[in-house]
Image (cartoon, rainbow, N blue to C red; front, side, top):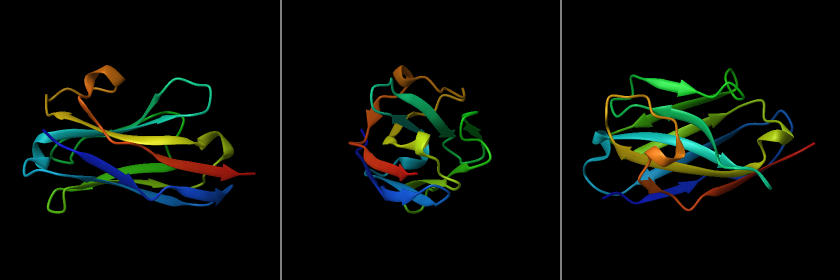
Length: 125
C-alpha cells in the first residue's frame, strides 16, 4: 500500500508557473505507475498526465500538452507536475494517483487504486 501527499498548489496569475509535488510513502515507489488528475468546479475529474514506474514513459493530456510536464525521482519517492503558461481554465484541485505498474499506459480514473487528498491550484485572470 502507498500513501500520497500533494503539495505546491496555490494562487498564480495567468501565464505563471507552479510545480506540484506528490510524496509517496513506502519502499516500493518505483513499482508504481503514477498520474495526475484534476477536478475543476462543477466538472468531472479528468486526466492530466501519467508517468510509468521507471519514468521512461509519459502521457500528457491534449489540454495541457506543451505547457505541463511530468517527472519523478524514485530515489526521493516523489513525483512532480511542472505547470507553465497557466490559464484560468487550469483552476482545479489536482490529485496524484498511483497503481502497481502494469506495462499499460492507463489514464482512466478507475485504473488507479491510491489517491492523495488534492491540492488547490487557482489561476487568476
